[in-house]
Every structure is written in C-alpha cells, then in structure tokens.
Image (cartoon, rainbow, N blue to C red; front, side):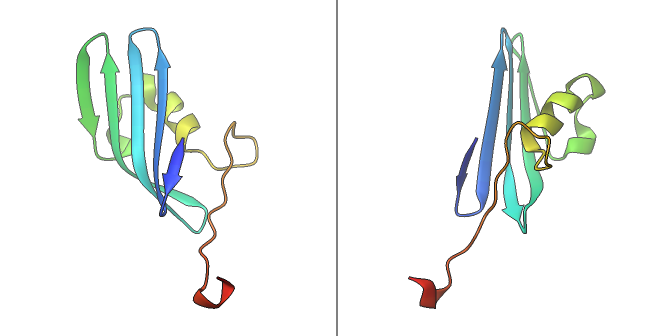
Length: 84
C-alpha cells in the first residue's frame, strides 16, 4: 500500500488475479474511489466496494480495512503550519 497526500493505492497479486484499490484516507477512514480487478485477462473497474462482485469483496475489504485486526494499519496526520 502506498499513501501520499491522503490518497492511497493498494494492490494484491495472486496467480492470474490482481486487485488494485485507490481512494482517500480521511480521519482514519478509507473512501474507495476505484477498484480494478484483472482475473485471467478479464479486466473490470468498479467505482465502489458495493459494485465489486461478492467473490472478490473479501479481498478488497482486507486491502482497505483500517481496523485493529487488519494486516495493514495506518494513521494519517497532517502537519499544521506551526508544526514545521
């Protein structure tokens, strides 16, 4: 997962399946803007988690989960002008 300026990109690859999720992180919450699933050369793009077919949804949720038992945890803090 990469995070820059509050925007994130997370990717998972397994065999012929790749899942890429992009979006924003605000107040520790993930807002998905795009999910790209390429399964054996069949590439589909979705605008939200709700649009993702159920057979991929668990994988996408793991990539974007920011809860205590998630494999990836992140905390975004913005610097204030007087903190520099």
